[in-house]
Length: 80
Image (tube, rainbow, N blue to C red; front, side):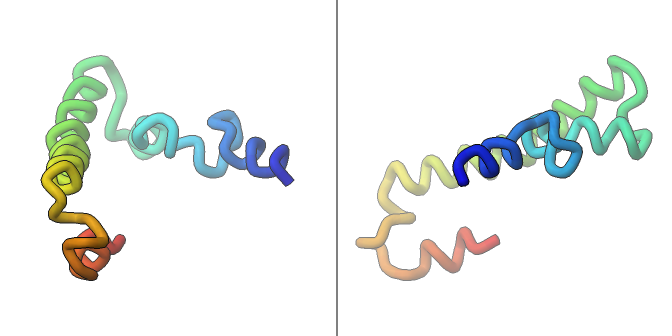
């Protein structure tokens, strides 16, 4: 069972490898990233969006706003 899970989590597996690269493979495949300047632009946009969301959630957890003690609203706010 664990070897199956490890194989599925492996970045070399074509299905889901984008999870480990922040979507760069998909961006290259779709033509969004074609050279170093477009890669830099892609990564800057990714940091501004994903980084901001991650930092906001980390800050909310740190101050206790997203904890079981804060009530059930934390699950609703972070529901994907």
